[in-house]
Length: 272
Image (cartoon, rainbow, N blue to C red; front, side):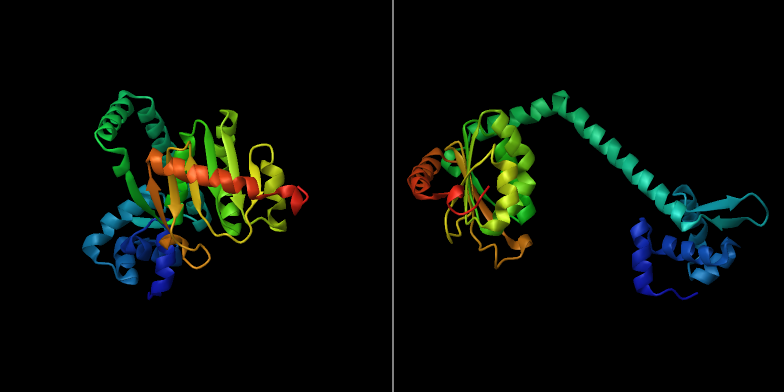
């Protein structure tokens, strides 16, 4: 039986390798069959067929009939999908539980101790780096917000505002509950009306016209600024420069404070 490569690629989404996919499809087409028959139909070496069928059995794709010669029966595909879903959920739950256990163990304390000791050996001006990819940038911003104690300043673009508030909303709300001041400046328009209503008790918004600045400043201590135009760059190629130096952060915050006074409040152009 000849199976198209594109179809086999789709079958591999069931977490099967090539031989497993071929034999499973072959068995589905026969309902029940022996290993020898399946080897010929699927064009899988006979020396590998029994091992692969055993693997499919363990994964819950087939059942072995207890008779001679031994034959195999395919499990209905819809049932297989449900089994895969349950297995993935179980594996994920176990991994998450293990991670939570690590968070509560002495291991994380030792790792944090190593990190703090290492950081103390580095000059503040040397603590900087680049973050590549928009998802990684958002994750790094999220981490910064978790550590915020006094203030969070976000300057972003029209579309960037929507992305950031959607991704960061949980940590922003938690920061506000800690008493952190949160200010956001962006080129606002009517499309932001829903966001402004949702966050109006958490964030102080200002309108900055067509300026395309993109940076986040935390506690006058650290910041990350993006060096690409988000309208022209693919998200995976976006780059953020993270800097943890009080002098640079303080200077930027002072400049922002001057600009903030001259920015339009949301009441000047949108009914929030």
